[in-house]
Image (tube, helix red, strand yellow):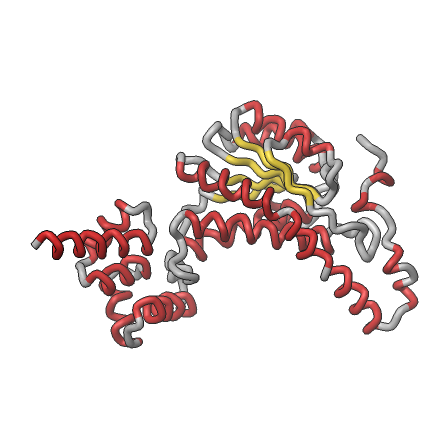
Length: 310
């Protein structure tokens, strides 16, 4: 392992020097100024992030899964992003998963030594039965966590597409990624506290990865999350509101469509636009891989051809 002093994520930030002597407002301003650097650095990596999104879509379309693997803050952020996909986009829980060194208990309490074992990372890939259909994204700020390295090594052996995601361009982890994302946000306000800028960068990028992938997988119509799962009153209201916005119908009509569609906004929108029953709408969406836009376009094109032929 390289000397920790050589890692940019561990170096001392001169812009936050003597922060312990600043006023509360000055401390907050320093943190805020450093946080402003994060989206700028992410923008520089958008071409690489786009390549990863396309591979995620390819894996899922082939029956594979998106697996995040991380340790500490990186692992927690991966599990958070994965956990948000089912309620937001209606994905089955197995489709996007987050794995953290030390297991689920490490989400709430540090598990000493868990990230120091390549063997444990490889074992977790074995237990998940990683295959060539899957895409595995290893996340670590420094790019040196043995657990994540071991996981990517094993995933690559099993034929999965691998992605190394770090905040250090010269990271060792990049040796085991087919694709690389490096967001070099520089030294932290508090030296080595990578839950700050590095963690923010990771959260933003994972948001981008899953959001862009779900859009391309037909989980979004216009800019509406039409596969939202109505699991509570707030989400039921949101689903009905989405139907009303997408169709231009009244609140009462949206409620009726919501009920008739089996509480599935995508079906409700297609039913309303095409003036068809739920079974026909379901068949149409299935043919168009779940895309509302493509389903409506296909229906409209067919109706145009029918009218032209008559």
